Length: 322
Ligand SMILES: Nc1ncnc2[nH]cnc12
Ligand SMILES: [Zn+2]
Picture 1 (cartoon, rainbow, N blue to C red):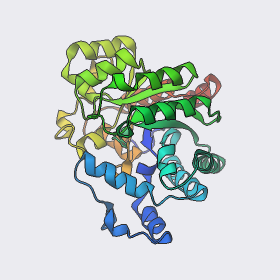
Picture 2 (cartoon, rainbow, N blue to C red; picture 1 turned 90 degrees about the horizontal axis):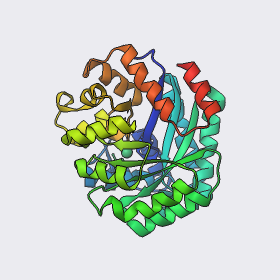
Picture 3 (spheres, protein in one colour; picture 1 turned 180 degrees about the vertical axis):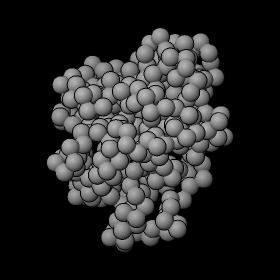
Picture 4 (cartoon, helix red, strand yellow; picture 1 turned 45 degrees about the vertical axis):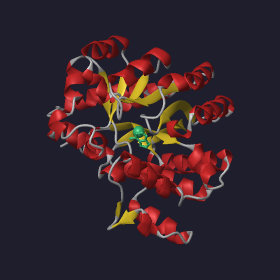
């Protein structure tokens, strides 16, 4: 049982964490037919492309600062109730802009929810700005320029998510140069839909301290050694990988191989209700499906806190809670 273990989440997309019941109520509030993306209390999708479409539908029913405050608070309270002490939320101002919310309104709403959850439970959280790869290099570059100049104490990092099969990492490297120069922490989705070359591109051109997923690096033994030598942290999301058919089952999933090869790994939930999971369930999967002991799982949580995009004082407080 991993219920009692302290937990940390470094890889969760905020709109992807919306409980279907909340998204349903939001749709009704704005006169949108929820049947286009929710059936029998679950989100409707069948592959990565339809997942992204469903994700965009869910995002489109959050239309005000208050909606985003409620979403962040509901999700963080859920995490805190499962002994989570720290969470980084991937936030995408492009989704706010798609429904007419300015970045100020979008970020301000999320920050209100994060502060409310901290006041109620003590859970610490930060925001990581997402550039959506499928919106194209120019869009991601503009988002990076915006992130580099938008100073907010809860925004501490930059990430690129979205359709990995579109373009190459090289097309986006200028965006990462800008946010690196601005002092933001850097992580990037790679090695999820594309193979080892995508992780190698990320290491060569983006030099991230963490990689979202990264799991298909397992296809290249030299690359696995390189990840171990560099100390790059993989934000592993086993439930997501199985749901999206990156691997057919947990037996084929390389989490243990990475850990045994000395690659730094931590456990994450990605878009929990889409993949019928939660952070607590990912911890349980690590125990039940991968056979990790409590000590081994605690070591992954420690890795997450060591790799978190927080100031050193906050990191020391979080590590002391473990
Ligand atoms: N698993 C995932 N991969 C890439 N982009 C995403 N956006 C939300 N979830 C994602
Ligand atoms: Zn992700």
